[in-house]
Length: 138
Image (cartoon, one colour):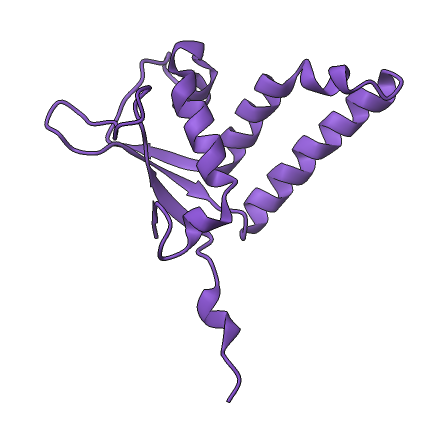
């Protein structure tokens, strides 16, 4: 009998445990892990966000004679936009924003918390994070 490959499907969304700048789990004052709920690479939301990020890069390069530097100049802003599109919510933490402000964008845009942005970007782009063996809690 052939193996049922659908057993290997990844989850569309998952919960990533955040890491502190030193790589240890990011904890609140009571010792609880802080997490973020995100769409993974198997979801339509992630695929559309990735396509938009690639389209923006290609357009910048086209407008600047194919120079890769044109795409790289906006890499951080593109990364923030991508993460905002694939993030559903942060869990167990708060960030001061003006009334009606976007906490997700504020966190990802805060360069002094750039370790959160970089960690989530790496995890959310890793298919392995959305398996039963990955770091994501489905």
